[in-house]
Length: 236
Image 1 (cartoon, one colour):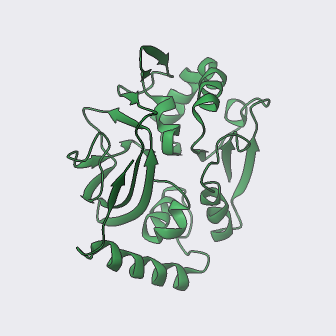
Image 2 (cartoon, rainbow, N blue to C red; image 1 turned 90 degrees about the horizontal axis):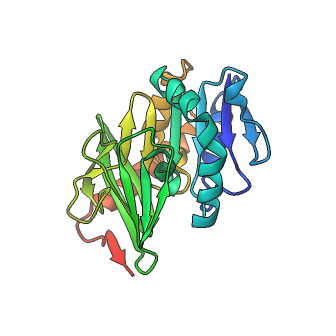
């Protein structure tokens, strides 16, 4: 079973590539394929069960969009066929319609009908707590941009900043098995219940690596994030 990790040399700002690595630790049937910017994507010629793309600098984001643009119809077909995608941080902006950076309009892949407004003079940092289906998700956000989406939210906000702004009660984008979120870092490690969900979507046993420890750490973090005394948001 193959999971393709796209462009790890440029799309790994917050150690996010431990997400697929952790999945591989959970089940020996998983084989990770790392595709660089100079490689032809494996998903063009071989069957993959999941594709991962992590956060990147704004300069590298433009390179990634250019790299994937010739394959956008194939990517759309894979999404429609239910192949699992996890894209984190500003990687989700790659799959929208465009990115506005001041007066500059950067065309994205146009697979989904959302767009992004980039503001490099203002950065948002926050802890985050929300729900996906019956699963509570915790995480951290750090972003210079806001993405505008009329529908298909991934996570319902409990505490922290939503997709668009502080008043938005939705975070991320979900369509079939495409999961896009601004949440950063080792999302699978700190959200073991969601990781179990992904393993089941892959058709695998949902036993986790270091499951007891992972769930204990998750429960501790969840209790902290649910505490009203904990400050969730800071902007700069």
